[in-house]
Length: 218
Picture 1 (cartoon, rainbow, N blue to C red):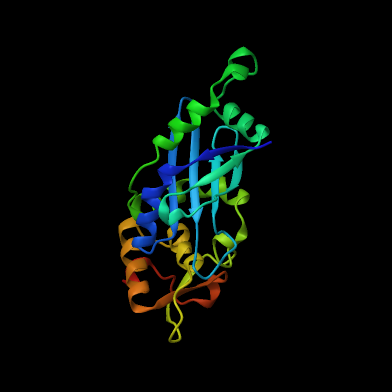
Picture 2 (picture 1 turned 30 degrees about the horizontal axis):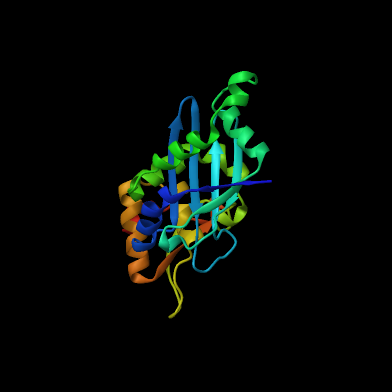
């Protein structure tokens, strides 16, 4: 039987992401020897990643996908962990099997992890973190996180038809593949949303006269 845990610490960063219209949450928590990368990706136009929390354990290179229950806008973030998943957390902490492993107080550990979640994360920090670790985590994430992941060369910006908004999983590619620093990408994303524009990508560089940089579009 799975045990229920509360991740109430997500309330601040979730509310912030909704308020700032940047539905990507990325942060890393270190606990003992364990390194835990937390990720949430959500999009009003795409339900495939709704209520999903991804935790990547960097020592053991394991990805855990968890469904979050409850009304998130009210600060409710409940999840259920099977015993084998709790064992993965212990292994990530580099606790060897034996008395210490078996007697480990998982409730205290998980409560401590929850209490360590930041209240606020600048978009720049999210961009830097996901760029640094993308090669590690990408093979373990659903393809729906980014749109047409084989297209990584920026063509330019495009106007959208009236009534449409830029897709988050298209803009998210700017975090990963665009030639520009985090500050410039933050500015560009905000401008695209304000002007109701999106960005276009290709996988064939031979079709371009010049590869676009973020600064070309700001």
